Amino acid sequence: MKINHRLKVLGDLVPDNSTCLDIGCDHAFLDIYLEQSNRGIKAIASDIKEGPLEQAKQNIRREKLEGKIEVRLGNGLDTYTKDINTIIISGMGGRNIIGIFKNNMKYLKNIETIILSPNNYQIDVKKFLCKNGFYIDDEEFVKDKKFIYQIIIFKKGKKSYTKRQYFFGPIFLIKKGELFKEYYERECKTREIMLEFLPKRFYLRRKKIQKEITEIKNELKD
Ligand SMILES: C[S@@+](CC[C@H](N)C(=O)[O-])C[C@H]1O[C@@H](n2cnc3c(N)ncnc32)[C@H](O)[C@@H]1O
Image 1 (spheres, rainbow, N blue to C red):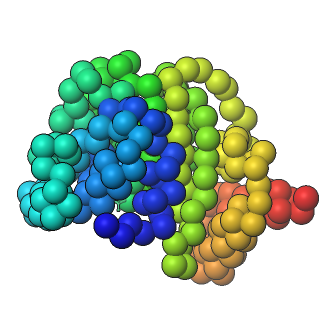
Image 2: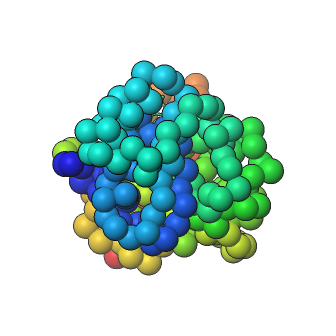
Image 3: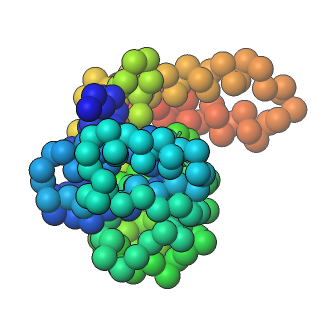
């Protein structure tokens, strides 16, 4: 089965021999890829909506993986069971992701690895999980078509981070590279456009955006 570049990169970051709950699996392409990668990964595909799960079941059937990939209907971590040690959530908004964890904080103590690719509010997601028993173990950018996505891997444990590390990502700051540059150049441009349209009376908001532009430009200098 053909998988897009974004999901392939994410799938390759899943630890071997893990039991994963893919929350918001939609088509289950990721779960099929994980199962077919022969790395001892057990993937459980879960979604809040019946429509996507039907599609997931059809795809799983087509790949003859019934009985290998379990499919569960439910909201967020409601589909969690004790055998699961890895959570994957990709392609959802950051606030939705935080809500999913907040609804079932009790399960976080059993989880070893959380792999997230939030569409937005990445800083809030990082702060939330790092205040609740996880640290950032790895970060990757992936470019698929014209979009650049962040993938963040959290592991059970504690580390503290500066504001700069939360903003840019502690591992991204070490790795940097071409996609880091391109991603933050775009972030800078977005903020410059926001400043053009944001009325002067929003003084504090404008000041914050201006400060972020300066910080991004400084970071891109080296
Ligand atoms: C844009 S798709 C992402 C699909 C796939 N994870 C990916 O990265 O390509 C988002 C999926 O998340 C599901 N979803 C949204 N909120 C959810 C929740 N609270 N619990 C489970 N699934 C949810 C939606 O039904 C949808 O199928």
